[in-house]
Image 1 (cartoon, rainbow, N blue to C red):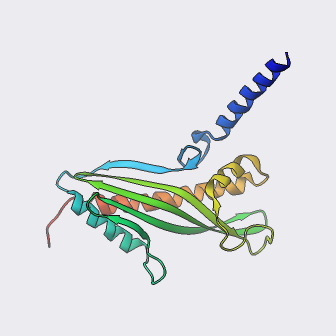
Image 2: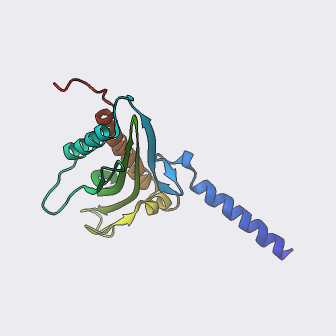
Image 3: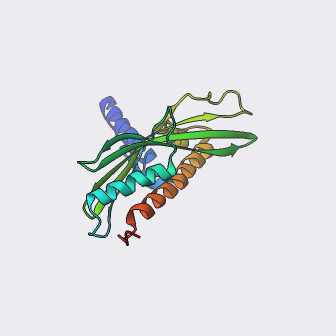
Length: 191
């Protein structure tokens, strides 16, 4: 009898765990309980791998600043048509009387082939700072966004973390739309 109770308890726990991390209940796409954006996009068949590679590099240059200390391109492999970038964006969210400044970082991978490309955005981390709530976050300390997902289900601040996830998705949709616009343009005149 005791073994049956333990067995049923384990089943209920595993069902609850899988429901907690249900894709349908979160505003962001997920893979293996982490935020994950990926799509294969077919473009004009006249766009060759080198054309798409050049367009992807141009998109990075137009949207992410390279400085003496930082280059958004982490890997550039023209022969295999792969660019890996590290991007970041920020937003501000309010919860009760507090304001939170959040910076999100992720890794983007753009793979190009003749007439198609695939983008993947994964490995999301964040840091948060609140000038009004001294117990939340320290400037620069990064956390996995997997923690944000867990907090959106189990903490007293569910609404705050769900708003973070919604804002992340909004920003990612803008980034993805920008990438698609740059890479999906049909080949035109040389001018």
